[in-house]
Length: 99
Image (tube, rainbow, N blue to C red; front, side):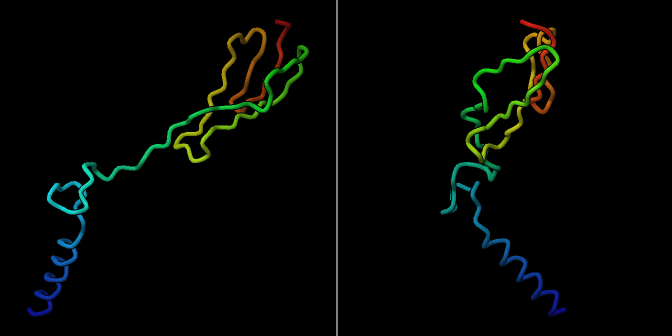
């Protein structure tokens, strides 16, 4: 019986000493729930500013997302005119015809 009492007392002590960041009466109150922070993308740059290809040839573009610790650095590659140039999900640009 004594063992249960001491175990329960230790659990109560641990849980009551935890800072409550969402309790305005606690000294650690921040006004916010503990949520993961999000780092927004501020810019995306490419390894080339221009690209000239002949029909049937390809070249891979490399995108650099800033800042380096951005939460989501995924790049979605698309072509504005897929009858002239196609682009793969990895940035491989293939010329279809002149345009």
